[in-house]
Image 1 (tube, rainbow, N blue to C red):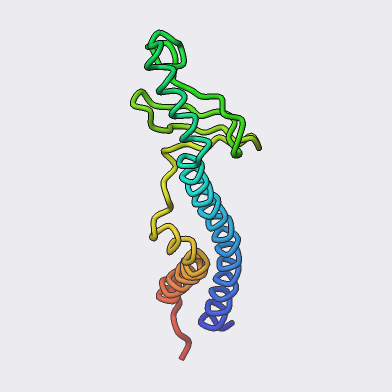
Image 2 (image 1 turned 180 degrees about the vertical axis):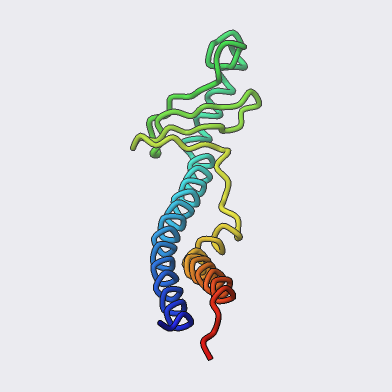
Length: 155
């Protein structure tokens, strides 16, 4: 039995399996990041669209004429506008008339709090296969090294 060669082969095999699993995790993570980025940009585009600006002007005009209207944002209601144009169904506003939430005509809910992904998230997604290889490979090599210390070499 050759402990050194067996440990090396086992480490490479488990490292390869770990890299494959890391690849699947990387794909999943990068898909999530891509969807988050698309959602953020879509919100930004719709929030400044002509349909949103028209809804904002209408809401401000309505609230200037009748501040008791429930869509003007008294304590019980959040200001909102039914738009039904430009891909927007409903816009929910903050008390200072900033877009907080957009309901689109395809059923999506887009929120102002969706941030753009940070650069480290892309880096982590790309490094998952590398970590998937190194962690099991290193663990098997370390266990093999410790185990080899307990075996008496035959002279």
